[in-house]
Image (tube, helix red, strand yellow):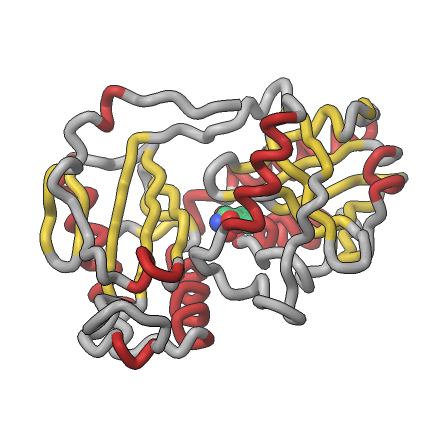
Amino acid sequence: MLQKFDSRNANLLVYVNGAILPREEARISVLDSVVQGGDAVWEGLRLYKEGVYCLDRHMRRLMDSAHALDFQQIPSVESIVGALGETFRSNGMVSDVHVRLTLTRGEKLTSGMDPRLCDQGCGLIILAEWKPPVYDNESGITVFTSSIRRNGPEYLDSKIHHNNLLNNILAKTQANYAGCDAALMLDNRGFASELNGTNLFMIRDGIVYTPYAHHCLPGITRGRVIEICHKLGIPCQEKDISLTELYTADLVWATGTMGELTPIREIDGRKIANQAVARAMFDQIASAFVDSRSAYCTAV
Ligand code: PMP
């Protein structure tokens, strides 16, 4: 699965630090914290015709991440949402759009690791692109288990949605060489944590399981799927999940804003059963996800 260039994105307008600029002129400083240390936090948002999905939850996670990293002079949620709306209007965008919103610690006085060098406040980049869900949610994806472990609170807490993505990028590189669509990352004890860019669910004997959020991003789509299961009366539990349990599951799927709900058809060459009862449960959850979506969208 390799994303292709979408010609609708040829003339994008991008928001950078207060200005709306054509994509080829949209630049940040070489002294920005994100260039020197990946020192930034981000959100991936999706715009449907009813508005941005789970906007409040995304903004809360962004603010929590910035606060945890001790960013200074963090812009208000209102100003960030205002910039988001301005970016959509400038591009004439109403749906079918994915946004990469990046908040950096900001520009430094001089190169160096000390956060105090960023004395001008945060930088804000809003890249909104025309992008339908990226995975094939009908036939599903293949997954390869990476040797790169997902980091947890013992190193860099996965609850911070930061731009230090090299762990996940190395894992994805391994999956690419293995000819698979995504990388499965394990936690420090060898239990499944998540895929390199999505969360993980499985069904076995009528129960939905997902890994604890100790070593994965507490994804917003993950949170919605758990809520939907509770609403539908489908048992859903967080649990330590071993590779064997995934290989022998009745059905496994991934969740994320970029691709929504994506079945996994193969892990490390083992076909995942796609068992009929589990498939009916998954279809019920996926339909409820789509049906409830507009109630969770906010027009900006
Ligand atoms: N895990 C990782 C590592 C991610 O980067 C993302 C997407 N930001 C997700 C899971 C999915 O999270 P969400 O449902 O909030 O898009």
